[in-house]
Image (spheres, rainbow, N blue to C red):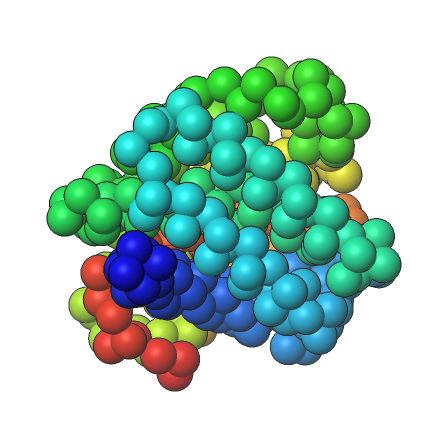
Length: 295
């Protein structure tokens, strides 16, 4: 009887965790499929990358779905934040190894495992408590988890993002997470919804959200490849597209082409902004459901 009751209780948790993981997967697929993106992999090209392409990014995202499901399940099942932080840290490290195995050693989604892993865990934890899944509530819960120490994490990883944080004294992905993802709940979601409200199609709305994030983020992916000069140029170029009315206007479209040319000439790719766009789309999907598909 006990075993039967345990299975009855556990099955909905697994199903709900799997459903959240599917939403994360869809956000990752929506991000990489969004076209045209400056310096990033999309349906047209590899962007500024030589080791990435659209198919590899999709393969990596699909391979990571069980990782996000495991994180969500941990969130559903845990009432102890410290224990939960240790558990999802271990899941994340296993997920990174899975990613590298699936991609023959190419880093496709290291930043996404961190950002979306925290957010899906937070969403599950709030759902288990019957609490609001409003974007700021989920982001704040994720931030609280991010600020807890992962005691099994290596002191230094040698990753390019970590080195850029140290060299340029910026917070990077960890800083965004620990602050509760302010560029996701602020610039990203605000621009996404403002663009929709004025009648932009979904592709344009998502591009504008990406540009809003690029314009403000100290992106360690850009810093590690091109330094401060490249970062300032990309931030200014993204702001110029938005100032011209966004990606759908004639002037905005020309400014976007100029931004892409700058990224390719510099050999830089705003991968940190791409991860935060995926996070934006995930939080939007939590509250808006399937109402906004690709256009």
